[in-house]
Image (cartoon, rainbow, N blue to C red; front, side, top):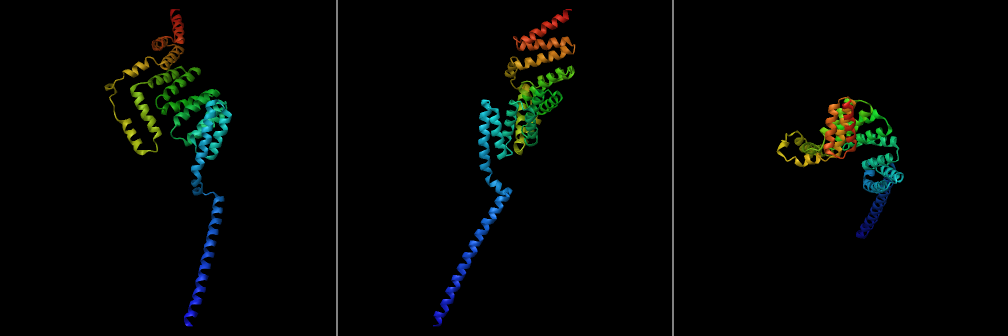
Amino acid sequence: MSSSSSTIPAKKSTENSENKFIRYSLSSIWGMLILFGIISLAQPKWLVDISSPGKLTEALVNQKAGDRLLKKGYYKAAVSQYRRAIKIQPDLIDAYGNLAIAYTKLKLYDDAIMIFKFLLKIDNENIHTNYYNLAELYKRKGVINSAIEYYLKSAEISPYPISIYSYQYLGDLYLRLQEWDLAIKAFKQALANKLTLQNSYYGMLRSVEISSHEEPEILKAVKLLLTSPIEFENYDNKIFEEMLLKDKEIAKTYNFLGDAYFKNKDLEKAKINYEIALNIWPDFVKVKQNLKNLEAIQEK
């Protein structure tokens, strides 16, 4: 009797405990679901980060679509794709750059300028290129002083060969402004950055330095190489010298330098640079005409 009376309450107690545990578990689960719903609406950073790989994939699909349209010349459609990509993934640097190119093709220069100035704030690897692009856009707009400002900035930090073009276009703008001495200086700087073994070596290192700012070990090694003395005369420079003798871009630069000396009324130095240009490019019609004009003036 006593044994039966002792077992019944124990069973009832167990059932009550199980029911309480089930109710507690269900309540906890519902609470977590409600809490997760509230958090989802609030969009905290950790939750956004969970979905970022999917967002990036979607953004890259739009960017690649924009790239294809840009190559085919469908610039307006490309703009739409790039803007979608950026809306999904706001730090997509390549999409910004190609969007600026599409704006440039559409002659929406102010929009392109705004993009490149924004890239200067977020893209540490391509500062020199963004300076160069800004200079090109201001030149197209006819804002010469701003174009000069950005060509100078690009030239000062650009690795070979961008520095050549920055200085060359800078000299051309100085010619337009009739600033002969500044034009001469710019063209000389362009020639100083021409293709040589030394310029190619240091240009390569500077390119790696720019792209490795977040990789301390590589950056340290590059900086060491940049500061270590090298005897370039011990290396065969023949291939570089042969390429210079056929480089039409270098011939153009010598011709521009000759023009700057000619405008500055230094006819002897103008002739020297015209002749160098003609030796590099014997069929350079413009230089031949410049030499004829120069000789005619000297004969008077």
